[in-house]
Structures are given as structure tokens and as C-alpha cells.
Image 1 (spheres, rainbow, N blue to C red):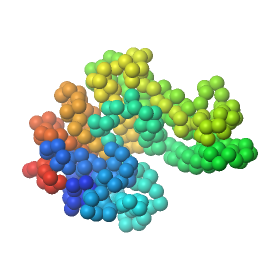
Image 2: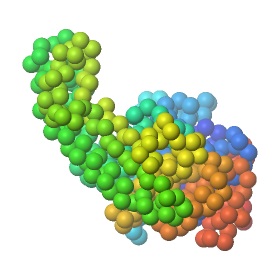
Image 3: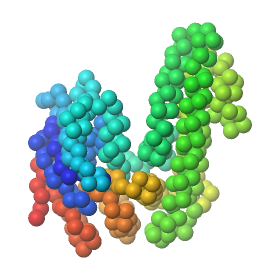
Image 4: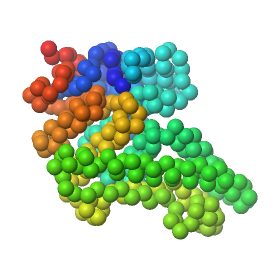
Length: 358
């Protein structure tokens, strides 16, 4: 998977920006506020319909405009496609080869991206929703049936919660439980299987980074381990009626990561948190490449400032091995770091203007 061309219009301070990236490394350097991160945001919008910095669209759109749009030309296994996303306060419009698509998920599937940015390093100690998102990115790409179960579960959960809030009869509330149980247990199964596969990728990466620690990942499924989801919903019904909210289910799941049997969220140093986060993201990339036979796009926002130089160089080595196309931002040009490794392009960003440095 490669992004061959990128056009950005009215996204933050970027307008009429056209980039023809290298298929390996792309380095964007410039002062803070120049627009470097916004370029990575644009790529993420093209893949997911939103920025990796948050789902709100208003901050992304230039204040003098009512919409933004990002278009690109992508190539996968010799096949090229034109893709585009338009975001406004009214909603989202996405196209593949000029045809509107019903869901941005079609774009996410054909143009997968992973982002590593400063806020990423908080996700191991942040709210569970961030760790569920990390897990479900991989599960979505691993199992084509996952998204259908996820949609069914979310719709059924929404209806059950609505019935709870309206004070409807128990029959009206439990009407949605069979579909919740079917979809929820499949979601849980997919998540467990993905964690098992992800764990298998970590030892080689740990060794490559010179680490002899043991990382473990545990799924807290969101309901009692001693009951099935059906029994858990039945058991929690009275409490759910009082609170107006469904308590058990995969929507309450969490992912606990430990380092040498100790919770990393509570016992690890800031440096260890950063390194484990990087290793988990690279493990996702490695698993994706091995299972899909193609690569994903990796967005690295100011990673050189977050990691020790030796670990940053190790990240570059993994990118090369996995043949990932990467987009890297930094304050200073890092041509000295990548120049002798693989072909790359260097771009200078200033006041929203992007110029390739030859």
C-alpha cells in the first residue's frame, strides 16, 4: 500500500497543498505551528474521516471556509485508486474513484493508517476507550466479520439504553438482548484472538530493541468472567433500570498491559511507557503485513523528540524491514538519520506552505 499523491484544501493552515510522496520515507520539518502535523492529520482524515487528535471537525476547517477536502491517489498490489474525503459541519462525504461510498470504513479498509503522536503515549494510562480503539483497529483489519458484529452490537445497545432511559417494560428492554449477546460474544472472541496474535509479534521486536522484558496483554471483556453475556445482562437488569444504562458488555471492555507482570499504567517510567507504546504499534504493523501481504501507512508525529536516538533508529529499521511507507514530522531535518538507509523525500513546511527539498 502506497500513497502516491496527496492534495489538501482548507485543513487548518493548509490550502492547495500538493505532495507526491516517496514510497518509503517522507520527512516534514519546520518550526512548531508551521503545519507539519496538519499534513499527517490530512492523511488520517483521508483514511478515517477524522484527525488522530480528535473527532471534532470544526477545529480542522479553516475559519473562513465551511468545509475541507483531502484527495489522494493510492496504489495497492499494482492497482491504483483515487480517493477523497470532504468534511463539513453537516457531515462527511467520501469517494473512491469518483463514486460516493456509504461508510468511511470502506476507505479505512483499502487505505489503512496507524499514527504515533505525542498523545499516543498516554493511551496505556488513559481512559479504556482509547485502548479499545487500539485493539479494534487491528481486529477490524484481521476479521472481515468483526465490523458487522460491532455495528449490530452498537445498534442493539443503543436501543436497549433508550428503552432503559424511557422506563419501558422489561420485555421492551430485553428484546434487544439476543442480538447483543450474539454480536457481543463474537466481538469478544475476535478481540481475544487478535491479542493472541499480537503477543506473538512482540518477542522478535523486543529482541530487536535490545529489551529482555516480558510484555503481556490481558483483555477485560466488560462483564464477569464467571458468567456469559446473556446471564450478565439478566443479572444486571435491575441495576441497569435504576441507572438507565447498560453496564455489562464489550462496550465496557479494557486492555491491561503489563511489563514483567507489573501493570505498566501504574509502575512503568515515562520512558518505558513510550517504548512499550511504540512496540505495540509496530507489532500491529508487523501483524498486518504478515496477515494481509500488504503494508499500512505509518504516521510518526515528532517521534524523534519523544524517543532516545537509538530507539528512533530502531523504529526506522523496522519500517524498512516491513516495507512501510512512513510520514515523519520533526523540527529539524533528519536527513542524516535516513539518508544512508533508503530512498526518501524531505519537505520543508513554513506557514502552511510545503516545499520539497532536493
